[in-house]
Image (cartoon, rainbow, N blue to C red; front, top):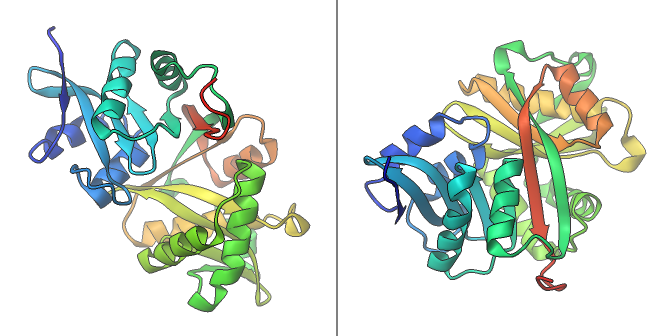
Length: 289
């Protein structure tokens, strides 16, 4: 079968969506970004430069280079390196990270000459999936705990949490004003959630991707002093109950293979491993080795 590499643009949305739907577990970021930002790259949040492998008019693989410099993947390893190079060339952005199935990310790193580049995060993760009808709801949500949308007067606390989350999980020092702007956007979009117990906020999470049928959970955080009480499990469950109320059917999340506490919490909710995922965030100050 003869293939070609092409920049996608207006009019290509349907064939791109058809391809992404054949791999629903690994394409949540791609499908969500297409839904929120569209296929034209103006450098705005959720937008990116989309480059695909085509055969007989259909998409066989795609890489997008996002507004934030991160490359997202879903393509055969035979094509993913060329697609990554072409997407970065077309976008004219620096590559700040790579996210996707592990074998694809490794192939793209080699093609881009980034295998030895310094990183702030280089994580192999388990990819989990759950049908929302099978969600196991923790008893805490019926015994004094409730999950709700945060209020604007709680933004300062949530920004503190997000800064702590970034420092603990990624090692990033992020400008507070940038985190605050993102948090206010998440609240406006209705994708940020907090767990309240006895009038105190004790945990939070958000939907980091949403499609017509599914949500992906991210940013799960419980302050260290409040851990080992089931709060993370409860806030995720509450966020998923809201997804079900909105008519969504499935959920995806990923967590490091070494994070055994998180794995136990998600499995207790009913999540099951369906694959793997890699998150590579480059250390731009260290250069590319």
